[in-house]
Length: 108
Length: 119
Image 1 (cartoon, chains in turn yellow, green):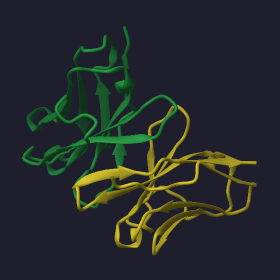
Image 2 (image 1 turned 90 degrees about the vertical axis):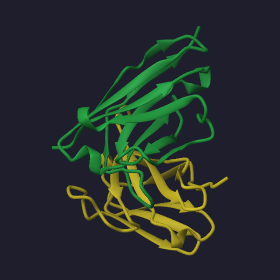
Image 3 (image 1 turned 45 degrees about the horizontal axis):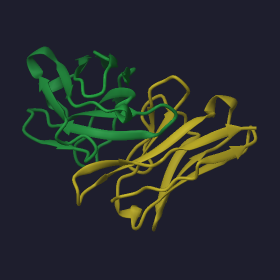
Image 4 (image 1 turned 60 degrees about the vertical axis):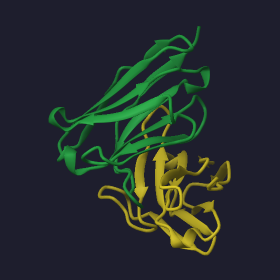
């Protein structure tokens, strides 16, 4: 089955840069989307198609893909960025949607 | 503005059935694929099923195929999930989301509805 591998947790100090990875063979050929989910809330799309941002999402959020890894980068991290982050792709072989296991971002 | 509002969740016994609804507004509902996604307590997101704008294309996750049925009524701007033969492991918050076509993202989500399967 198609698996997207994310680290369970990432910690970063305020003002620093957080990088959350999403791994899968040849993920660079996919369109990767990223969601932020705060406790008790529905997920929110923060990056789509590898590196585009929906309106209202700060420029501090960016994405990239290279080879087997997609990365969500959050610059100048703020306390309000503390949340769970999920990557997502569409698996063209099975015609199904796949989510990564999620990464809990802790702002120290 | 785009709004998605789920309803129909609740407590159901193992083996029971439940029908979830998602009322959509603020966009051309029939122009979009729609999707159901769930999240078990303390767990990650799990994609369940999507349906094309006209309802002609439907796919399910293996975990629910044969037990759950997705459908839509474009005249009522509504999405549905009929859930049969429910199990304890189906306990989760169920979200509807706009999107689901090839390589598509989910740009709008409902607030979710909680389904608890317990005797």
